[in-house]
Image (cartoon, rainbow, N blue to C red):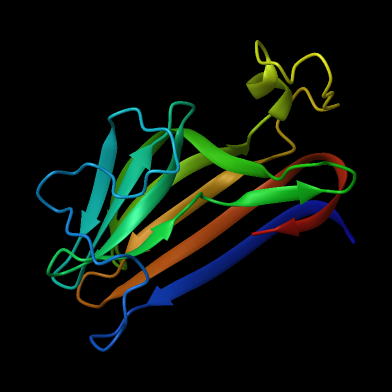
Length: 177
């Protein structure tokens, strides 16, 4: 267990021409309707594309938060279920990172999508549900805020994920992923 203060993390996903897809092989490039059905969808999307990959980021009802990765021929390869999540000690469920807006940036490393993220406040999502009366979450504000950047390399099957996160308090985190 570590005390959460701030974190900067960079990861990359390289998908070579011999990669085996992770999804069902569904083609989705023409319709831009999500193949992944385990998320709410608010009919908004934004995409990054080069000659090797297409990455489509979809907006949930509460904010930007999940995406699908397609090969050049339109086959679903992978799903990014969320922009990240945080699990705090003594909590029942992890808190996803979601963003209210997205900004497209072109740079020397490729085209990027920049998301100003915050962890979901579970208490807000329980209001008006049957869980509201018997589940109490102590947090009334996001436990973590920051920025997640997805960058698609211009001429390679490579996506960079960059996380710049800051805690809003002294929390003990089981994990951030």
